[in-house]
Length: 314
Image (cartoon, rainbow, N blue to C red; front, top):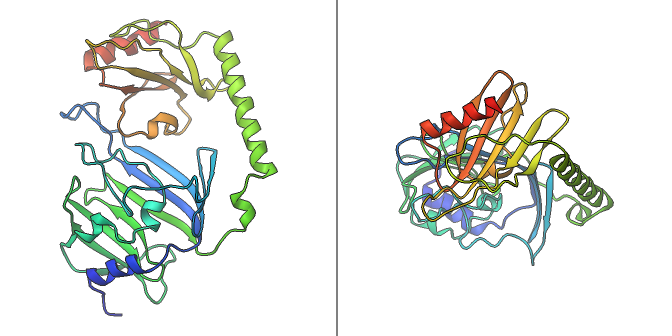
């Protein structure tokens, strides 16, 4: 099959309504640093299972949290397609699969210019007669260049990424058919999930009230003295603690989560760790992985060293 021009791909994205489909939406984003590469890179990741039933029904599930939306509550992006804040940090967008499934008349793509030829690519089992086509694009905005993979038959974007791979959004494990209507309504199963989440939250609150939480004995600013258990699994020692930072006009550090996780567990990527606008420090000792998730500024290397040492002392 002859490769289409970029203009033909863009017109296909404009012309085809978003189809019924379900699968997974994954996001990889660079994280904010101090402008000098500190803290060391620790990307923000998200993996969401989703289903879409046109025109406005969505079902998304991330880290066990289920969201159902319709015409009134569904996503209403200001601009269709992949879009990035123009405030100096382009990666703080709201991640949702509609960024790739609803690309009609995307301002970002309308102004894009191809940097090379359109080429056919392999993309899982999406190998229909129309094919999947990738094109490198020059953009006019906060992200200067992207590589875009378009499913020509479905009229959606399957993959968008920067050339260095530090940012990437993908649709994977796709099935192009509508799930039954009941999947988009609160059911007994969904209500049971809500009850389990509420019971888990109460269990965490009880543990926080009756056990000493890991809090650094040294901290560069004032702590309020009321740490709160935010997430975790007390049976394994995995804890996420809000340190109750007292913010001041003199220091931009506004909040801090301390994460303690067993060494055998996979990396912690949930909760506020998914926000690339927050600073993250990660280290390990003989027993635990430790993370600090900070709003406002990172700790300096000296502050981080003293904080980590004080946790060992505690």
